[in-house]
Length: 326
Image 1 (cartoon, rainbow, N blue to C red):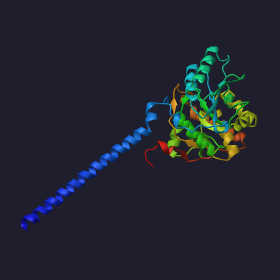
Image 2 (image 1 turned 90 degrees about the vertical axis):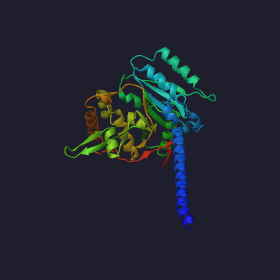
Image 3 (image 1 turned 30 degrees about the vertical axis):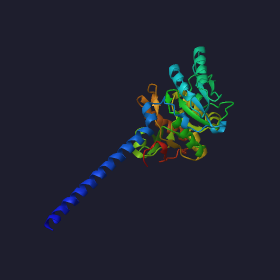
Image 4 (image 1 turned 180 degrees about the horizontal axis):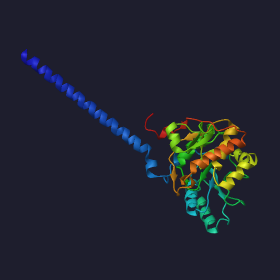
């Protein structure tokens, strides 16, 4: 009896050790499985924007279920070639409109290269339409929002020539826009707030958005909006705002945010997505940029009768298929 009583604690201890070992092994297996799932879901991001993941995108059959890209460019032909090569491979793109504001027409060599690119990226017998939108008013930032004749789509993706998004990211943002077609849906959020000590509006960049979790604009360097807003911007927005933008070479994106918010009465929608900026930094990197943008806000509010149309939001659209957990 005494020997049996001595063996029982030993057996219980061994069983506990075996149970602990099994739990540890199960935990390790779960960690390995989760790691595999995580890296598999992020493989396209790790490989870079040139990864063609368009095979998982929805094949749209009508122009209304596709979108046009309006691309702003200025004397950066190499970047333009790279962007056109990428976006013509995206299934949802119906047409690409290059906003050309250079004093000379596009060189024949550039046109030929882009035409060959379009043909090379055609699929199922369909080519992306490619057009240069010529502008007599050279270098005016208002050119990017001029009305486009013969546009076949309601949706426009406005983008700079040095900004690249994976095709799947663009398709997800387009699907978000389809649920809210009268507001702006974009990747680069910004905000405004009231400086009550001075009684004026202030412009907030990315760090202000990050700190507060609030935004009231998405920049037109990477945003979807309805094509009707091109007409409103050019023909119905106060002409004094367009003159100000031409003279100061800034704030056309804020002006478009005012137009959309004023007509829709809705805040924009921020979409989470990996941005590949393949060019050099622009005017936002210059000193005094935030102050100049703040000045734009206050001048535009005066032109709108003292009413601020921009509305704040804390919403962010995220593609759950690219998350490894909720």
